[in-house]
Structure formats: C-alpha cells, structure tokens
Image (cartoon, rainbow, N blue to C red; front, side, top):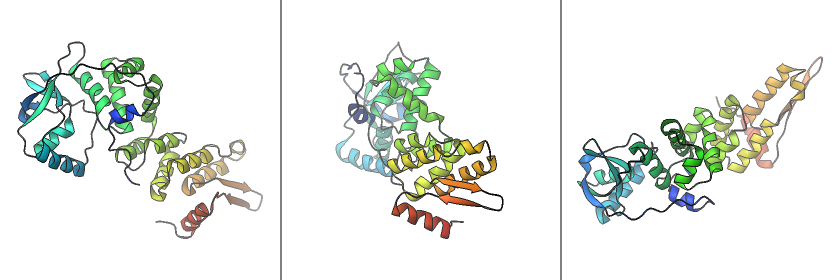
Length: 283
C-alpha cells in the first residue's frame, strides 16, 4: 500500500480542520549558528525520516540555502534543537557548516516540552507519532488534554481521539509509522480484538483495501454471530478464525452427522478474491 499522508506538515493539517485558535507568536529575528553546536532533541516525536526526501531537501538547500530557520534553545552551553530536525540533517548532507536559527528561551516550560509542542505545530508527524507526543506531554510534563489543545490549536476531542490510537496492538501502530496503512485504516481496525485485528491488517495490506473497504470488513467481523457462542463455543471460535482468515462473514451450522459452512461475499470482486484465496492459498 502506498505511503499516503506522510509528507504533509501538521501546520497544513491543522489549517484544514476546525480547531481552537492557537495564540500567534511575535516574529523573532534569526541568527546563524554552527551545525556542530546543535544537539539533537531526544523529545523529537519524528522518528522516521525518508532518505529520498532528505536527499531532495539537501539538493534544494545546496541551491537555495536554508529558507526557514530552525528553532533552538540554550542548554548546557550548547544549543538544543526544538524544531527543524529534517533541515539540520539535510544541511549536513549538503555540506553546510552554519544554519539560520531562532533562539527560544522560555522559563515557563522545559526545553523538552517546548520541543514537543513546537513539533506538533510544525512537523509532518504521522498519527502515531502525534499520539506519542501527546502522551509524553501528559505523562512527562503533567499537561491535561485541554492544556495541549490550547497550546497546539486543536480541539480537546481531537487530542482524545488521537491518543486512543495508542490502544491498538503494536503491529498496527508500526504499520502506520511505516506507511503501510493510514490513520483511517487504523481507526477502522480498532473495532476488532487484538489477534483478529492483526490478521485483518495483513489482508488490508495484501489486498490493498481502502479505508471504506476496511471499515466495512471490520463492521462485518465485529458484528459476527454471538448468541450461538453460548451454545456452541467451538463453532463460534471456528467462525471467528475463519472470518479473520477470509476477511468476510462466515457461518457454521453443525448437525448430528455434519454441518454447513456459509461464506458471504458482497461483490464480484470479493468473490474473485475469496476464490483465489481458497483455491490458491499462500503458504
């Protein structure tokens, strides 16, 4: 599945959604500082940087220079990066020795807190990185969801819904970070239990299901037969495993001498998918 949405900045994302208005900050003059005096910020939410994009940015910097200053704060006689990790890495690749920077010293907030908030407003985080940054602000800096919403210009409900993504199994979270599925896919899979969600994840990636198809599949699996589980737990368990394996609704009816397995499909394309899956199973 193509990587979608990983190249957008949060500033564009925020601008495209109804949200609380962040308080604008006055412009601050930038200065030139040596790259060797800048330390990476351990609170940087962005963990994965695409090398192709870095190379493209480095080429642009070679030709035009660093157009947007990075943001730093003073720490232990050096500069700690608050925002601009990609620009710093690309500037190093481009062979620069100095970059324009804005110095931000704020006694009210720790440098790590400033870095998290700054990156939430500016960086192209994916949904999991964004959620992890929110969690760090809550657990490490004592902020409430309302505090975060005010500082980054988002609704409290948005913060809450994003944090909910961290309840997904790690395999699903990793799939978002690696660009295999989108935030929409992950939200659809939250309706399923852990192991079932993992099985469906692999089908979503293998069959390149879009978000709507994933939502429909998750609804079908989540609303499987429940009443008969009390009477025939073995059949209910088998139905659950078959639904996860086939990605569609499955009913098992057992009699004294045998039974019947019913496999539902909802389109010609889904029939073809099931036919291939059953007649040419992947080992």
